[in-house]
Amino acid sequence: MQLSLSRARAASRVSEDGLVLSSVSATAKARLWHAIDASGYTRDAHRPHNSNCGICAGGWLLDIRNFNGFVAAAELMNFTLAAQRLNITQSALSRQIKGLEDYLGVELFEKSGRNVRLTAHGDALLDKINDVVVADKSLRVLADNLGSGQGGVLKLGACSQLIERYLPTFLKRWTSENPGVSIRIEDGGGPELAGKLRAGSVHLTVSARPMSPIDPFETVSLGRLGFLAVATEEFLSNETSPIDMTDLLRLPILTLNQRHASREVFDAACKLAGAAPSIVLESYSPHTLFAMAEGGIGVAVVPSSAMKFGPPLVGRSIALKGQTVHFDICAMWSYAAPLPDYGMRFVEALKAHIVAENLQDALW
Image (cartoon, rainbow, N blue to C red):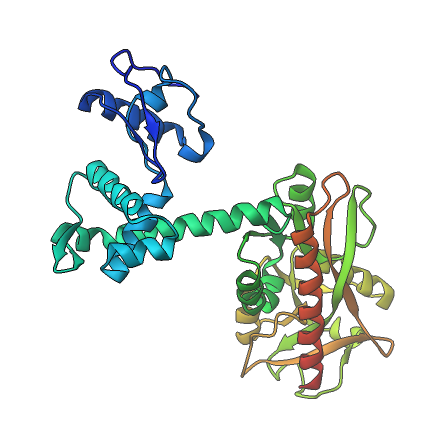
């Protein structure tokens, strides 16, 4: 980008403090700075080449060194020590501070014997300017991570039960270990999530594994879940042994609706048991099923990940012919849009977390 101002033809020089200095009118300087602000242009992206360049001849231009210089001087209250910390000359630091004062239109320091101290304006601006320095460091870390494949955005789709059960503690730890990655989550049912994945609105889904493979998607198993029958003791005796499907299907059933991939597994188990369920309620939310079960309406059938219930409800696992009814949960993404390195790290770490959580549940 080049900016030219007819009134700015004076020869310019670039000093070591990162300012381009010249003699131009305040109006021209303001216009130039406004244009630079609006464009997001930085001095590091510009290399002075001739006096006809609007940036070279058009006014001073700040960079992050001005803010670093101010913060160092504010912390040490001594320009000599601050310059030594920044590995520049004291005169360069003085020009940095002067440039920042000219830009802000206020004096930032005043003399205090051999040292300096912040003026009232400088003290008021210190926190804001320090925020700029911190933001610059954060931006550089993010840019480095992006360039090395360590950072970016990961859009995740998952069903609400899996989000509630596994993600709160996992996400807090994982994001602290991967600060360059921004996670965005949408909840939804299995078929709905597959549609979002196909449309590209999410990069990755976590849900029950579909009964039939979906061609454009790659899957990785994350673990295995069973089913729970949850009801009052009017319907279920409080035992540790599983309830068999044949006994369960004699009772009024409260079940998740077809938006959930786990429902497909339950329906298949009913067919294998040779009986049709007497469904009283189909709902998207396990919490709705629990509320109805607590009211004595029937038996809620939910994945074992939905464990947030208590008295008067009791829960028992569900078996078919002596074998626990279960289904796999998986991570799924499109072959056409392979996951970046940080996406694969996320999947591997989530798998380890789910396995550990399920093992802990089994010990209870």
